[in-house]
Amino acid sequence: MLNYELIGKRIKEYRKINHITQEMLAEWTGLTAPHISRIENNQKKVSLEAIAAIAKVFQIPVDSLLYGDIYKDHEKSSIRTEILLGCTEDDLMFFYDILCVLQARLKEYIYNK
Image (cartoon, rainbow, N blue to C red; front, side, top):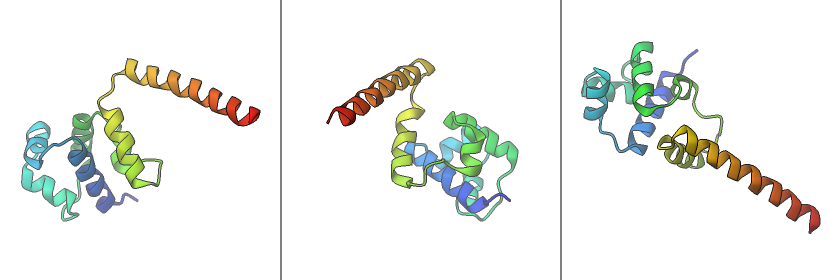
């Protein structure tokens, strides 16, 4: 069962992280600003078509709006999302490589301590 209240909150969170107004999101999705407001405030159920359009604007998978982030810590999740939203695929691969090296060095450090 979809939790429309949480979907609305996630839409609002992504919108604020990206410094996008309801008017801007409405223009880019073909919806109206009052409709976006009603979705965010759980006064209207959002359609799957609207969810897909909104996810496309934020460049995130639809699942992120439907089911949320796998991390429970809201603040850390928001920071990660904010950082990753502006990255290209090459940027993400570069970050992944760095994290792998850091993880290996951390294990070496802990093991040799």
